[in-house]
Image (cartoon, rainbow, N blue to C red):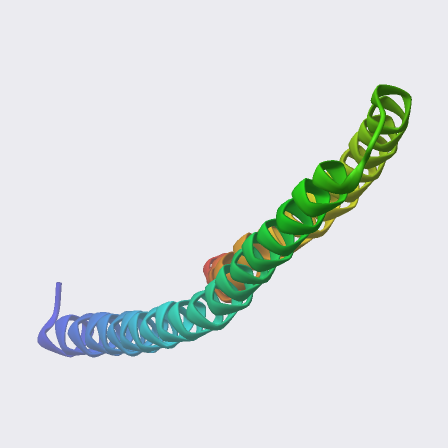
Length: 130
């Protein structure tokens, strides 16, 4: 191999390595940004979920107190059974609705947490293919 050919090869290799280094640095920076965004999104979504659980606990405590007061005020066994059945039906309906709401918020937490990472993975895959 001649000296000129070796210089051209070395220069081409250096250019390729420089490009790979630049791409790697760019990916690392993007990964860091995605992790930061994911952390911020997770924190905000988790705060919403925590608030929803606190709200639910307060509502359930209020409903329990009202139910106990209502049951205590009943004078006859038939009225007690009727009120008890009504309260059970309302509690089941509320539990289903609350469960759906908490489920939706939980999905939102995970979506918010992983969306920036998902986008970063897609970007890295596109970069790797190019």
